[in-house]
Length: 151
Image 1 (cartoon, rainbow, N blue to C red):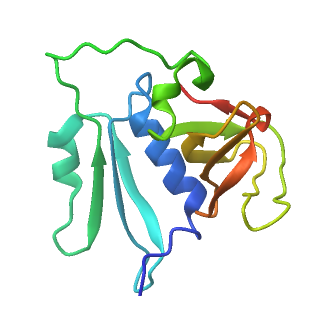
Image 2 (tube, rainbow, N blue to C red):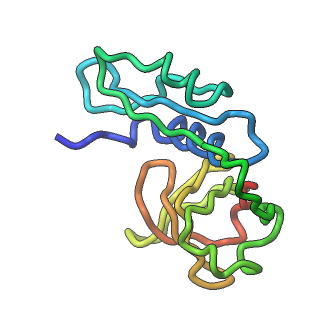
Image 3 (cartoon, helix red, strand yellow):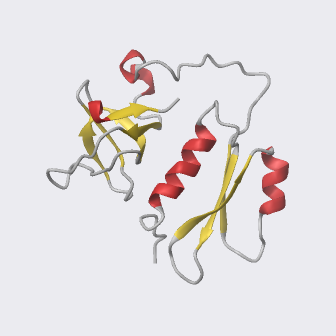
């Protein structure tokens, strides 16, 4: 059976976004299964880097780790405050956004979300429509003006 990301989707996305957001102190997240189910849940997050994350790993459970590692030899310009249209080379590179308004999908090619939900893995299609993973894990289109990009 496949891992179920839908049940805890918003919490999983929130942990992911906190790790990938440069200004967030959170630099790792651990995920595991709920009991004997296929539902993936957040097992923990932290700010202490790889060393702290490794201490939290449990060899008696199936766990997935996600960590932000900073290389002091690489200096990247912070482009997070700019609109995605200003950086077409970033489209499809995992942009994240927070929903500003409620949106209900018109058909199976679109995603639905509520205010404050996170949309991840965003691809910029054009100025008006983007594609990404909604809170239920479904990948589809949505109106770009209903969300704000997260730095």
